[in-house]
Length: 289
Image 1 (cartoon, one colour):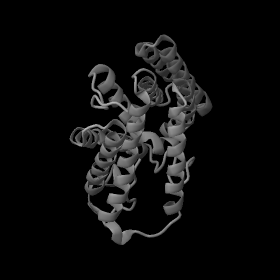
Image 2 (cartoon, helix red, strand yellow):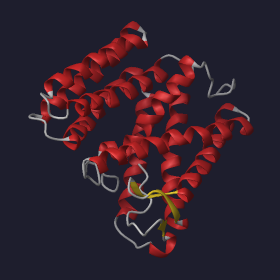
Image 3 (cartoon, rainbow, N blue to C red):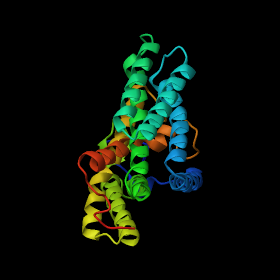
Image 4 (cartoon, helix red, strand yellow):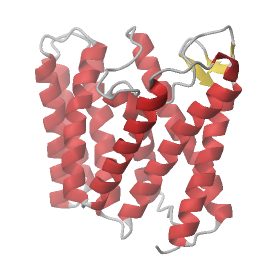
C-alpha cells in the first residue's frame, strides 16, 4: 500500500527535497488512525463479527478488482459472486471448523466467476475471487482457532501497518534508488528496508510488552515477515500498471481504494496462516499475554 513517492526521476527518488505539503498529510494519517482503531475493535469483538466485516470489505474490494481488470458485462454481478463466495467460505470454515471446507467453497466461487465472465478476462475475474477469499479465510482462521488468535491477528496487522507507514516515511525522507521504477515508481530500497526495520521494532515492543517475549526472537521474525507486506504492495502495483490505473479506487481519502489499503494484508494473511497451521510456528514464541 505504501506509495513512497509518485514522481519518477530516473532510477532515483529525490527524497526530502521534493516533499511539498498537500492535504494527504492530514487525510492519510487521520483516516489511517480511524481505520486501525476500527480494525482493532472488530478483531476484539470475536471471530463471527470479524468475518462479517471481512465479507463486507471483500464485496467493496471485489467491485474495485472487477472494474480494474475490466470489460465485464455486469460488475455488480461479479462483485456479488465474489462477496457471496467469501461469506459462504467463512461460514463453512466457522461452522465445520475445517479450513478445507472454506477453501473448496472459495474455489467453487472462482470457477463461477470464470464462467460468468463470458470470455472477458475470465482468468483475472476468477483470480480476484481467490485473491479476496483466501486472505479472508486465513484471517478468520487465525482469529477463531488458536488460543491467542486475537493477539496473533493484531500482531499481523501491526507488522503490516508499520511496514507500510515506515516505508512511506523513509522512502519520502531518504529517497535513493528505486526498486522497480516501471512497476511501482515510488518504491525505493530505503523505504523498503526502513519499513521493515520499523516493523521489527514495533512488533518486538508489542511482543515484549504484552507477551514478555524475547526481543531477539520477535524483531528478526517481524523484519523477515514484513517482506510479505512489501510483496503484496508490489503485486497490486503490477495489476494496476497492467490495466493502466494509478489507484484501485477512491473510497478512502488519502489512501485510494479498499485494495490500495489492504494489498499488503492480502498477501501477509495467508502466509501467517501457513506458518501457524502448516508449519506449526508460534508467533508468540511460547510466551503468554
